[in-house]
Amino acid sequence: MFEKLKEKLGLAKKEERSLPQESSRGTSINTAVTSKNFDEITSNLKISLIEADVALPVADKISNVLQKKLEDRTIKLKGDRETVFREAVRATIKDVASVGTIDLVDLASKKSPFVVMFVGMNGTGKTTSIAKLAEMFKEKGYYVVIAASDTFRAGAIEQISLHGDRIGVKVVKHQAGGDPAAVAFDAVKHASKNERSVVLIDTAGRMQNNKNLLEEMKKIKRISKPDIIILTLDALSGTDTLNQAKLFDEAVGINGYIVTKIDADAKGGGVISLLSETKKPILYIGTGQSYSDFIQFSLDWYLNRLLN
Image (tube, rainbow, N blue to C red; front, top):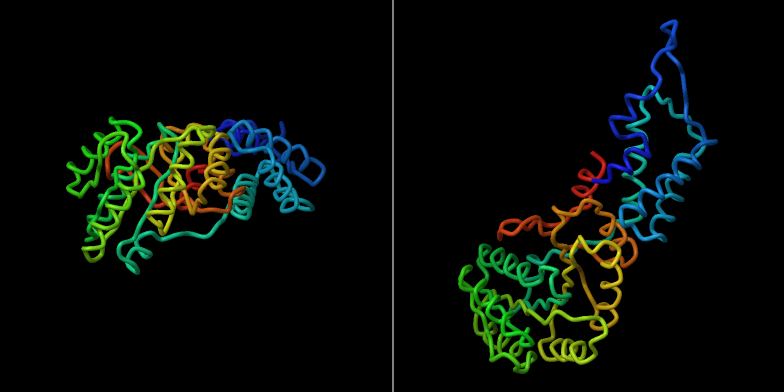
């Protein structure tokens, strides 16, 4: 992940081997990186970030902040260059991409039923993410209800019902083509009869230009009054994840994200752009297809994967 970025910064092993270590007489060469060539280093970093799907404004911001951190410093190529650069990049990305967190389990412990509405494009792993979250809440002792409010496709109702059967949680559903807001209403009503209950509302995947489906999503929000709205995003979508985030936020208001398929993302820069530009947290990430391949997002975890 980010191998090109590591090369540009001198963090990749092959560049380490190419650094001059000794002169022909066996005397150590005290080669240094000074403020004169920091411009080149940060320029290369910006290019690498853009190649890794980081949005241009975010890449600019990171390279500018890094420039300030490194200027007026002298770093020996032979000594601690790798450590200094690695930690400078880590600190810079944390400065740019750190946002507050949302603890869903803690929020759910304070209100019943706790209602979560899911939105996202088809193919982003929304339904699977709902199933993973349903199992997580069930294991923690919550009564979980899934609202099959994606009535646009009969296959979607069947898919979420299958997940519900496998996990052992209640799925409230109507006929295909029915009113999705009515499904959400019935799910919340059912959950309200039980203590420590959580409602997870599935919605139809929407193209950005489909006004009817967007209006339907707004109606579901009005009727179900969700405590939190989560947008699922596919890490493989690259820079388009940021566009999707902005569009859905404008339509219904987004509180946070679940990013799926992060294990298959060879570039990974979309995560940085998402955090930096929207200032909304990534709650969970999907790392595989099984229900257990689902972990809370940590920027430190991400940076360890990015830079080590």
